[in-house]
Amino acid sequence: MKRKPFIAANWKMHKSIEEGISFFNSFHEKVKNISDRETGLCVPYTMLYEIGKLKKHLNSPIALGAENMHFEEQGAFTGEISHDMLLECGVDYVIIGHSERRHVFGETDEVLNKKMHKLQSKNQMKAIFCIGELLEEREAGKTNEVLRRQMKQGLDGITKEFASTMVVAYEPVWAIGTGVSATKDDAVNAITFVRKELNELYDEETAQKIRIQYGGSVKPNNIHEYMDSEEIDGALVGGAALKVDSFVQVLTKW
Ligand code: 13P
Image 1 (cartoon, rainbow, N blue to C red):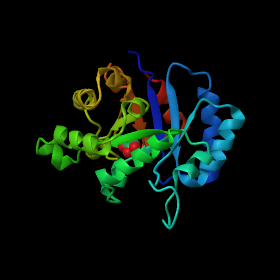
Image 2 (cartoon, rainbow, N blue to C red):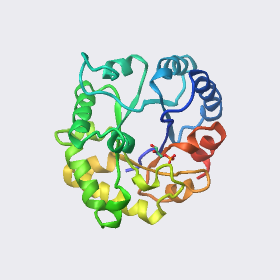
Image 3 (tube, helix red, strand yellow):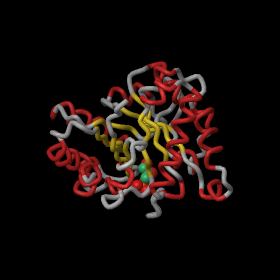
């Protein structure tokens, strides 16, 4: 099965609303006619509404993503953001379980599973479900074990119908923001393992539908290595997605 490549930006805690809007306008102009690959911008909450409106106004093919979401419907959860609040802004994708949420903010597999269930029960936005091992886990030969646990627990009770709409981002924690990207072989090996596990958790047909991205120090000068591989369906890009020209190159230089 042919999966459409998906190159997404994760801006993390960067950019003012004005900068976000200006980026969106010029990025849209450069990519609006590209149809053989999908692109998306996962942006801070403050600019979701404005960018959602702009996207609609321009009838832009760029997907809009949020960087996180709470699993409760509403209530006394100071500082959190709900599913419906994101949907109201025109969000298409929600990043679930980014390594910074897991390791800086202590989100567990159980919490992430609840978030996946919220997305599944509403079935209106798609997940970019992130997994990846720490350096010490890799050095201890535990990469596959960690990836298996993150998938088994994070996706517990998630149906094959919903799973087939999600994107999995394999982001080894040691490669994020460090400039030390995974070698093509490391990325291909981990992603091949992830698809094998998805095959076990679901079935061959579902596993073949799910797009799996690589993330971690992806740049204009290394994207082609990953996209040359049949196994890798795209990238989740941090630092290199903060400037229009650099992100356009990541999207097109392969
Ligand atoms: P960098 O591309 O800056 O390494 O960040 C990757 C990332 O965390 C994307 O979610």
